[in-house]
Image 1 (cartoon, rainbow, N blue to C red):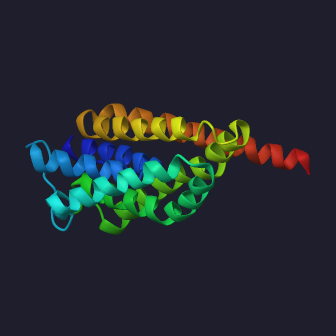
Image 2: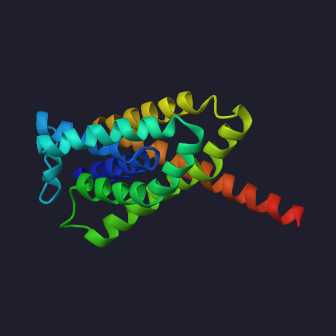
Length: 190
């Protein structure tokens, strides 16, 4: 059962990293540092270093501010295309706590794909639509909403991993539905 809950947590945290790369890292660091619920194994235990936690906090603020402005938002999403999947890979591998049972390469790849998929939907579909339809006026609210969702998802992934498994299945199904629908629209428009 511990193996399963670790994997469920890992999927939830890596999905959260697709919205904000730094929030799940901070959630893992805080829970590992200040509670007995979760212990990070080396090299991931570096996240609990106070200086690293401060750095992650600063990066959370920078990402929130960058996401709040329409022109900067798109530049930030381009930069985050590389950072969010890597953060997803790190939180997946760190939180699965089964690196001895599951190949580290497989863990990293799963986190990379989940966070990359969430980021792609956010950066390629959601954010451009929000910016275009509201002239960028809704960007701060959408950014705040994404950060709240990333925080709640990260905390739930750590505390109630089975719930996260259900949410990941639902989100994956919606992503597949959206992609199929988009491909069908492209095909019929041709």
